[in-house]
Structures are given as C-alpha cells and as structure tokens.
Length: 84
Image (cartoon, rainbow, N blue to C red; front, side, top):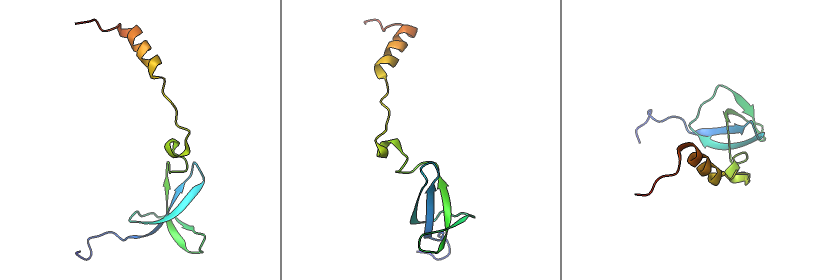
C-alpha cells in the first residue's frame, strides 16, 4: 500500500442515543467529540441513529404491514383490473 493516502484506522466509539448503547470498534470515522471509555482511555465518539440494539429487525419488534387492506383500498380507488 502507498503511504500517506489512507485515512487513519483507529479505535472509535459508536453511540446509539435512542437505546443508550455504545460499543468500541475500529474505524476510519472522525469526530471532534471524545468520550471516556470503560478502560479509562478517551476515544472519538460518533452518534448513530440506529444500531442492532434499537433496530426492529434485530429486536424482533418489526411491524407486519396490512397488505390485504392496501390492495382493497387500491381497488376501491382505481377499480379492479378488467380481464383481457
């Protein structure tokens, strides 16, 4: 690899504000804010909208869409398709 063209790859804390959850990993993300982690060191912190702790797919709280109701509403608005 060529030197001087790649971003720094270092430990970064990602924090899910909605779920009050944070995890330490390595990344090239940058941030002006820092946080003191459990090991006593300060790391850059990046706030994220959603993580595996708050995402409906991972938590099992996914909504089931009412597709039958949507089809019926569409047919009421625009009529049923006629046969060929």
